[in-house]
Length: 216
Image 1 (cartoon, rainbow, N blue to C red):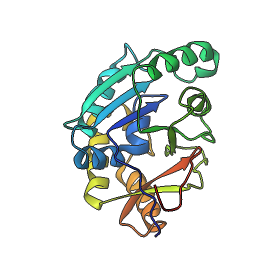
Image 2: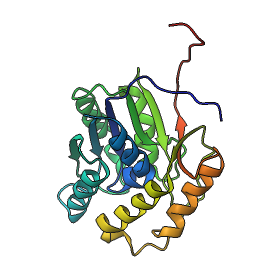
Image 3: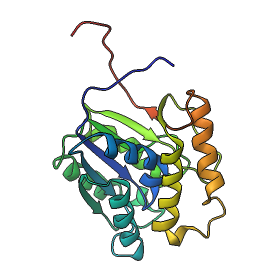
């Protein structure tokens, strides 16, 4: 596998439409990066769940997925499933969030996600983070919208297993879903691992990037 490596990463922005989107889409990447980057700063914005029991789940989960980092979490109260009706507020909140951070990498949903809330956030992200590397994560669910990813982040089996353990521990409200189980999450990460010659991996769709060939 031919590797493209970023320069030193010290700050991440992670965004989700719902509580658990970030952990499902890139929990293994968060665990791995938090363990390998000293003094990592993580800024999280979640559009919905504020003021509900899901907010407590999300704050607890993100703290567990980002151990020993400088973590800030903002959770809004946009109604679940109604994000398109709140476009103006989402745009304003995203602009305000952008002013609080200058991340090396921005993570959010991928723009072909079938869920309207995910899709809207994915499409608005580049309008605020215009000069940043944006990677779109995939969210396993009932719809057949799994993307054809263009970027892979290899993770060790123990990290993939720890991601699944933390998902079950911190999101008890979600275990009623028939897709929220070990086999689903480990199956997808193993598939992405096969596709990049790794034990496991998380996959991303890249919005836009430049590349330099040799030299400075």
